[in-house]
Length: 175
Image (cartoon, rainbow, N blue to C red; front, side):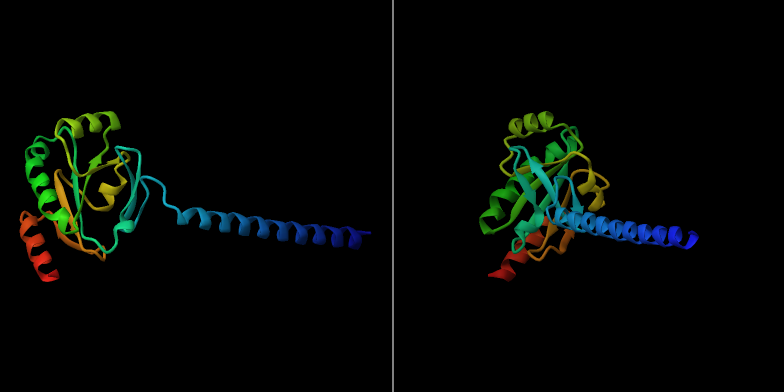
């Protein structure tokens, strides 16, 4: 009798183990499928997805093949406000040449950022880094901070004071 009970127990254990392995496999495949679509605020390497002020998704890798200037700022930063004319000039001068300019606002409510963007008539896209994950991934230590990315996604310039000079040189080489 002990042998029969032991045999049934082993069969139940095997069946249970098979169901467990199948369950783990289904969960793993499901999470892999979900991971392909990045969610707002998610960062993978230097790629990220954020929402803009119009509620549209911005995924950095969608702009592969174009240089991108990321301007990290906040509404409360006095120096950020004083640099807005420079940022607008960069946008006006280089976006017709293919430069994508985006402002990444760090950890502020959307309503405040919308008011700020309207008040200063920002011509470039403004993204909301509500959780601060993107600014952390790019090691932003102060604002404003500009990071210029090549069309391949490499960092061409980080915290450089001469962004316009770098852009002039880069666009001249591309002609």
